Amino acid sequence: MAGGASRRGFTLVELMLTTTIFAVVMAAVSSAFIGGIRLLKATFATAEMSLRARDLRDRLLFHAAPPHNDTIWAGLLSGTNNNDVLEGNATKILMHCAAFKPIDNSAVAQTIQLVFKDPGTTKCSFFSEDRYDERWPHRWLNPGGMNLLADYGSYTHGASYRPPSPITVAKNSKNEEDKSRFYIHLSGRTDVAGLPIKHNERIVVSVFGRQQETRPDGKGGLDK
Image (cartoon, rainbow, N blue to C red; front, top):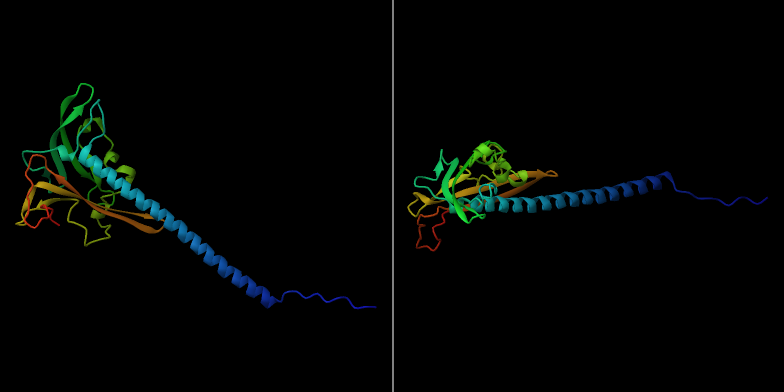
């Protein structure tokens, strides 16, 4: 009687070694995949914050209030004031200008009043008091809810950039306040997939009807 052919299988050590190698490879692949997803989300969030900041800048400068009553309302670049345009220790912007009514090509008197909502908190944002009786939503000046002024409370991330207030008055060549322009500082931050997304930007607002200083250093009067 012939003996049966021997059948050799994997040893326990070989199985354990194969399982360990497979687990290490899968862990590396999973980590790379998760990291790629996080990076992709952060990239999209960075792009969105940049677009929202541009949207806010355009609204502040050209359309401080949403269109209503068949009127296109102006922004800060069209505003002026006989007195200071900044009130309450630079926490309120008060300007007067003219809006446009396309239906009959007429001008409409407009008052721009912008104050900070929830100052000193991570939800700090602009709120328009212009025609407040009609209850305009403050999100008009907080597009996307991106908290572009959120870095002015205890929630800080760039102390070297962070100015003392979201609004600061320009300085002239003598380091004195230059009432012909002021700055709005956007310094927002949000967290996406555990990654901090930041955006810093300075909006220069020239006050209509006031002469801008020209400096001999060629900087055009834009102080730091």
